[in-house]
Length: 277
Image (cartoon, rainbow, N blue to C red):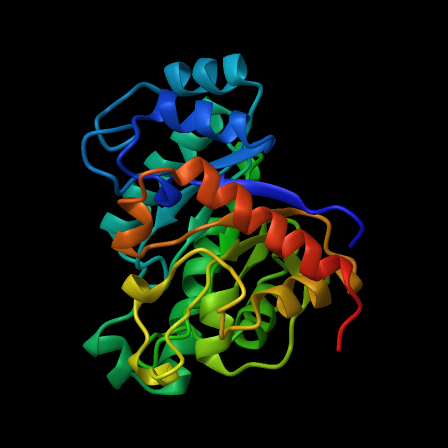
């Protein structure tokens, strides 16, 4: 990977309104952003019309890579179908490239059998496929590495996508945090449409104890081998967005998030450019 196509998820700076977030992205030289539907008080949770979002992005010279996210997508119900339809319509109207699909991660999903999880996943993908195809946007399936998640591995996602003949409608999200938690060796760069990066610097916490609040910007203290993951994806042919998605409160409180993100971008770029040890 000779050059990294960095992007910015709104979770990198959730205290900023959408216009200020877009300005931050442009100041860092990125070309794409991910907007979210779970940040109270700002678009899109505040009801901002999709046309306004599209105009703001156009003025900033930014592409909207995704809307993050349709939660519990593999618990397919009439309510979920309505949520999916509304989010897909919004994504198409604001010019987003796709929507992120996050699986169940609760006590019920932990208790379900492997066959039950597999069937639920295929039911949801089969229902989403024509909705996404009609809208002309992608469904970015994001396995979560938490122990109780209904969809932990990319292998399971890839097999389900193939079973519903969904290769044109769906792609994977490779999240460097969740890839580490899942302990999965396979990468599937050819099936990947979006990469989320964040780091963990507390080496005393085992994988079972890691949570979103531990996800910081990637630097030399990272224990996830985020740089190695990004390098390997690039070596496998991935050329899509590499999007910053830190959840740690200390990142959100940063007095200079622009400088912190710029430093992390430089660290990742430099690390990827160096040959693997």
